[in-house]
Length: 409
Image (cartoon, rainbow, N blue to C red):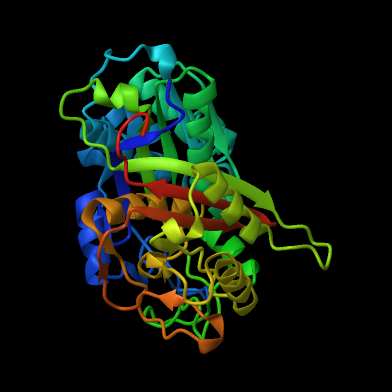
């Protein structure tokens, strides 16, 4: 069996588009999904804007029996999974259920569901709390619900490393194909924490932007950068062996997950950059040189120190202005466990459509020495891309995506 892993289906729920086509068109237009939060009353909070998925109506896509037992993030994950499987042309029963795996990423689970049930407990007593509270809030719930819905009885896992988790889940799913006998895995992450309970935690973190203007609140690599904007959404992908994909007539291969690496930053002073090491290891895993990379999708923290560290890591590997860099999450906000997987989806779409989406609203500070793609797309072949993500606490991850040229190339 080939060690390669290819992506044949992509399901997207993003603040600027549902489904890969709408999301990609919005991204190339530079259309932002960051706006004032309407999911709950934000008048009592200093943070008032975020990347909210406005046009998702779960009752249009899911059976009624699923709605009372699922959080908003799980509903989006289930629907995105349905879309990804449909796009990949995977039919029920054509792959043995023990060879079907699920690996998702999460940050904290179903915040909105948990808050609602805690309110019932506080106001009405324990008899009014839903029995589904026992799992609907749990960070592993998306993996479980996807597995049950599609009869996937192979290996399953959940990865928790905040923003880096969206990449780590894909890296782990690729390993299952290579080492554990799986033929197909569903992987990625969709996150949502737009409710008062989670919003308080975001504010307490100290790194969330206080700027109420959606056009200037989230400005990575800009001299005005003063924090990130939270958002919801992400991507679920069908990842499979090339042999499995090529068995299905007409299966579309968007690209290959060619390399992956994860490192951890120590708090001890003087230690080398873990992010730089993750890039180098991912390139080594993919068997390519920095000169082979056509674009880097940046983590883009919008914190001056973190932006400087990321720019330094990129220039150390690729050289000053050595590779186009983009941060399309300026149109969505940071999506926590969903952010990395959405950037991987963007990288695959960039390869498929030969275009790099822009970083909007940003005027790059000169000291970063990056070839930042701003305001308008950059067109041309994207044969290989590097996607970066960092999670709070020191997590670093890098994935290399590449155009697929066939088995045994």
